[in-house]
Amino acid sequence: MDTVKKIGTATIFIKKEGRKMVAVPIFLFIFLLFLTLQLYGGEMSGIRKPAVAGAFYPGDKKVLETMVEKYLAEVPASSKVDNIFGLISPHAGYQYSGKVAAYGFAQVKGKDYRTVILLGPSHQAFFEGIAIYPSGSWETPLGNVPVDSETAKMITEKCAFVKPNPNVFENEHSLEVQIPFLQKSLKDFKIVPIMFGGLKGNEYQSFTDTLVSILQKKRGDVLVIASSDMSHYHPYEEAVKMDRLALKSIERLDLNNLVQDLNSGKAELCGASPIIALLLLAQNFDSEVKTLKYANSGDVTGDKGRVVGYGSIAFSYANPNVGVGFIRPAGLINQAPTKLPGNSQNGGELDKSEQKELLQIARNTLEAYINHGKTPHFEPKSSRLSERRGVFVTLKKKDTLRGCIGYIRPVEPLYQAVTEMAISASTRDYRFPPVSAKELKEIRIEITVLSPLKLIDRVEEIEVGKYGLYISKGGFSGLLLPQVATEYGWNRQEFLEHTCQ
Image 1 (spheres, helix red, strand yellow):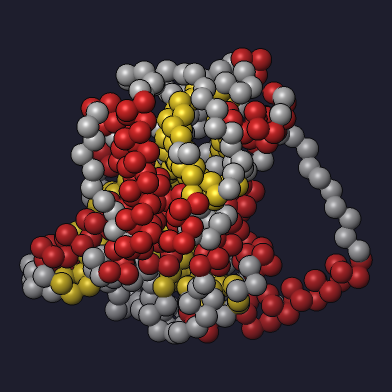
Image 2: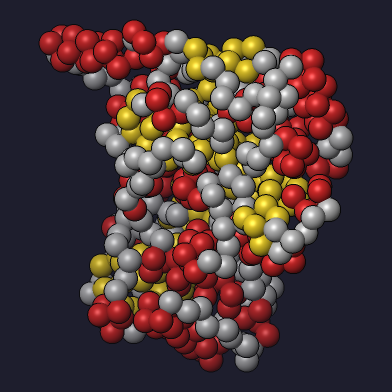
């Protein structure tokens, strides 16, 4: 039986101290050291010369400095975004996309980022997996920028499909064009140049998990930039329509719709893989996404017959006290179908007819999307289903979790949020394979409607089984719904510990 539940939530903060030490056998250390020297020393420690200076951007230092500084100065102060961890930035010639790119770099100008991870597509080389530039430095007319070999090594050690391959970067422009803007925006930074080839689905998540661990270890010191232009060579109005569709999905962190639109040709991104990785990364945090500037080549040249689209998009940590964003809770297993009290965002708990309607929306969405790849449109009978509320959709098969994703804060009308989360829980919970059409008859749906977040001062305020927990610190967070503690018989301390994991 499908069920709708209403819960309360609480936000608390935990300080974790101490490190776990692990002894490593000396022979293993020596082997790894030898391997490291082979991969990161020798000819790979040289200087990568600019490939497109004088073409995509001025080759003269003074002319380049003047252009970049002018573009940065023209960005209005009203566009300011703080706590940025990621950017999407275009990579066309500066005369076409430079003014758009400047909007992103103006946000980070003067900040203390120490490592910039550059994610780009390859326009010149074709290869499987991911290529990384492991060491040395990159030269532009403005000087040399060192590669963060320590972070590069960390990535290759954790992801076997990420290979040192400096040769594929030799003639590529997608990362190079970002560097002069960085040189005029930051000081004392290093780069990790990364280029995407052909990836399997699970490799995206593995790579993203590695980026998450890096951001956790170097909190506040790391900026991730995904390099991409948008639609290519369509008439102006058609291009704008395509690009707005992509921007909408990116802003909502709706990877499912984005990929669907890309596959159907409704949207285009030449850097689709870097953007997918950045969106997956953002889903691990309380993220806010803002389009800073959009334009296309027709806005620059006046030729609107065949244009290329450009977008500058910022990904930031939300308020560290109460994050707003799309999150993927960890460890949400075998939830008990108990009904728990709590106040709704506006109009109290849903009555039985509203619960039934909401469940039918979720069920119809699953059947339409999984069987036909289409998202149905709904006009809810009850006005309360149009209220904005936080909600989670949980899918179970024979009492075993099959997927669970949700909005912790009220960012969408409830019926729309349930539609989106039903699709996401069935296709985007990367702990599980997508739900198949054959499984639909066995899938049970639980919808958990959240009350507003309540900040608490003492852990003693937590009532196990009544409140769900959302713990946030420094842009990182964990969440568990209240029925999880009930199902496993946890006490307050155990509930806290599992939420922090």
